Structure formats: structure tokens, C-alpha cells
Length: 115
Picture 1 (cartoon, rainbow, N blue to C red):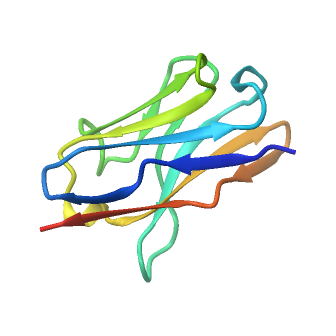
Picture 2: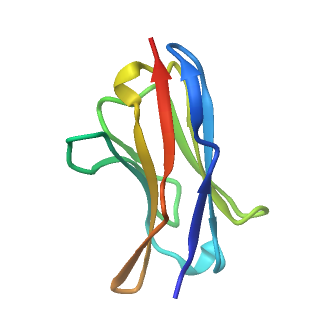
Picture 3: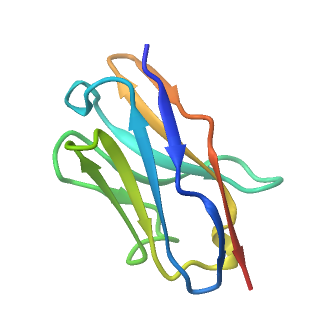
């Protein structure tokens, strides 16, 4: 069983920055691909960024050049640095981790970008 707890969400103005963190209950070295997803009201959940055990990252086209995903093994977190935020980035952001054939999700953290 893996527990994931997100933090760092909040209200920010257009063009601002936020840093989300996802704390895992097991060592990051045990987890396969980890990622951040988001769901806006009335829309389906969508991929934001993923990071495998290695260093090759993947981003949605809508966030490329603005968001950066990283693993912090010292804190055992997966972080999402979000810069140049836009109102369209408003959503609940979820952390996801894969362990073997199973996937685990956090409870989500709200990000609201005001215009």
C-alpha cells in the first residue's frame, strides 16, 4: 500500500508561481513512474507531467516550458514547480505513483489562478 499526500496548492495571480509537493509513504526508489495530473470543473482528469525512475520527463504540451517535475530523494517527494501560471491552469492537482501493476493516487490539492 502506498499513501500519497499533496501539498502546496493555493490561490495565485495570473503569471505567478506555485510549488506542489507529493510526499510518499514508501521510498521513491521503490516506485516506478510518478506523475502529476489535474482535473478542472466539468473536465476529465488529464496528465500534467510524469517522471520515471530515471531522468526522462514528460509534459503536456500546455505546460511545457512553464512547469518542472522533479524527484527529491532527500525529502522523499515528487515536486511540481509551476511558473507563469494562467487561469486555464486552475484545477485540482493529483499525484500518482505506480508500484508494480498497481497505481496509487493522492487526495488532490486545489490550484486557483486568478486573472
